Amino acid sequence: MKKIFLLFLLMVPLFVMWPEIIMAQQEKKGLHLDDESSRKFDYYFYGAMNAKALGEYDQAIDLLHHCYALDSTNANVLVELGTFYNVLQEKNRALDFFRRSVSYDPDNYYYNMMLAGLSKELGMKQEPIDIYQHLSHLYPDKLDVRFELANAFADAGEFKEAINTLDELEKNTGINEMIAINKFRLYSMMDEKEQAFAEIRQIIDKNPSQPRYLILMGDLYLEENQHQEAMLYYERAKEIDPDNPALILSMVDYFERTNDKQAAQAELQKAVTNSSIDVEVKLQLLTRYLAILQQSQQDMRQVNTLFETLFEQHPNNAQLNLIYGNILLLQEEKEGALKQFEIYTASNPEDPVGYEQQLRIALPDQDLEKIKEITTEALKYLPQEPQFYFYLGAVYFQQEKYLEALSIFEEGLANATMRNPIVESEFHGQIGDLNHFLGNKEKAFESYEKALQLHPQNLPVLNNYSYYLSLEKRDLDKAEQMSGITVKAEPANPTYLDTYGWVLYEQGSYTLAKIYIERAVESSKEDDLSAVVVEHYGDVLFQIGEKEKALEQWKRAKELGEDSPVLNKKIKTGKL
Image (tube, rainbow, N blue to C red; front, top):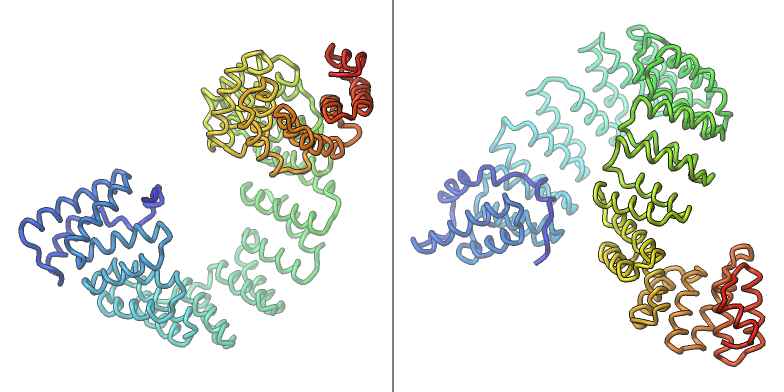
């Protein structure tokens, strides 16, 4: 049985009304159960609904199948099974259950709506029309049914029928925006443009002092590339409300479509500096203005004076500091950007965004002390955020303060909210590495196991775990299997190639080991070539009888910085 998750919370909540449905169901056509079967049916059905309410979906569906075995004509059981199979993506099976539920209870509003919705989802044209027509006759007061009927006609390409349905709906509701816009779209698809625009004019005539309908009409003309007509309606809206944010955005659209970038910028600049416009609207407009500058590849520094005006108008709005910091980052003004982010975090210490933006600056520069300062401050207010533990622990790790790093990662596991298993796996992987450096080998291996249980494809953990097992000369088959996954995933990664080669070496497969370690050397950039990899290459060359070449590689490893007693002895004696 597949596991069914909380997606069922989004389903039509039939369980809220199921006692009433059961009573009503007894009056519908279907099997007549004897008393014993009826008691069993009720027991199973009530149990299924309770299990569903408790989220025990596997048990619920099993109990429903028991009900189905007793009475395969019960519409409520059929629709419940259909709902389960719909969520399980067994759409055709769900459709069959919904159809059968409607056949046994043809006037049930909810069952018909569920059948119509699924048949529409599956691309059927006529069946949704038939269902909505049936429901509109049964429930003439349910206006949403007629709206769905109009949509079903439109989906089937029957635009005239769709418009007629909306006309009938309009008689009940009066002229309203939603119906008018839908009729506009339908007339447009029928290439009856004048009739399409007449629908919107009706709304304007009914609401002459409402600028949003004038703006809407302008927008619709703009979509049709009728620029002159669009501007006429925008001008009428401007006479009523010149500072209307929607109008300003529409005017920007207009100037962009007519390739007048300067006018678009001027419109936004004027709005952003207008003290009578709400700051939240300004932020929306400002974002649009910045997008125009980026799209047209203009110098972003021209907005700096604009921000000076905004800071004067709204000195306590830290959101401006956050946006300005991002703009300065685009200008590669890191110091100024950092200052803006610091101002933002001072005002919003419980918002992780400010600290994260600061880290965007500090991390590439590997400014360890600054990273430590940012993350330490962040954790005072955000102990539930795992990323700050991770970066702080990484700083201590890089500084070779392994005990401090271990403490931070363990604290993160204990306190942070791990929003997905991959993040939690990374924490266990780091703890494993730290324990290995500290000589706690068994604890390291335990942490690696936990990491892989959470994320079996965690490549760094697979690599380190397999390498350290090879150093211990234990579980080599397991090490080879884990390392093989990393090489398959990243066949040009020198670290993974070397690990796999070394595991093969420890297994005594020297020829195969040479192939992989040689590829590790060849895949390495000259300035990133690892002395350990080169020493391994020398070892494997020695084992296959190429002793002179082995000595060359050992000497090369020493030149690269490896200076262990073992390596020095190999160079001195020319042998392992």
